[in-house]
Image (tube, rainbow, N blue to C red; front, side, top):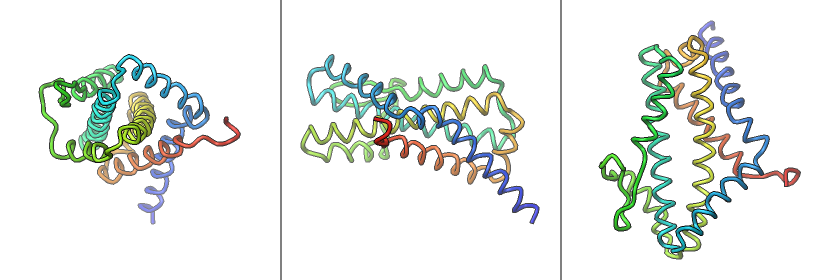
Length: 204
């Protein structure tokens, strides 16, 4: 019974943590949508070629996908080790993850800047978009997912900020059922990112 109560408290804290991390976007969805789409529009105008722009978006999604996996892996490692790095070190880790996830385009082929090639999962992920034969429809799908990934990453970075400034509580949350806990955090972040994709009429 005590264990059940402890898990309930832990789950409630995790839910509140992710909710607070998502709040800046949830309360200003219109602003975030406009800001992100303005950035994409500027990029599209600079690139000019529609096909090239679609490959740029694919590369960006691979970046966010790789970064997301690394962000979850580090949370898992901290939970298993029951040790959280100091805030400055966490900032260094974030920079490292971002650098390792950066992509580049060579002859219309996406690779990681580290020199690593895309694996079969990355290629299967990209196939979801390249299978859309009409470029305008493909770009719509890519831009929508770019918006989602960008929002999801912002929420995740806010979770990281909480972890870096609440070491003892973060360890208590992550240790024990670490795999299940990290998956719950990931699911909650993804759910809030989904919520942020839709603007209420009163926000417009």
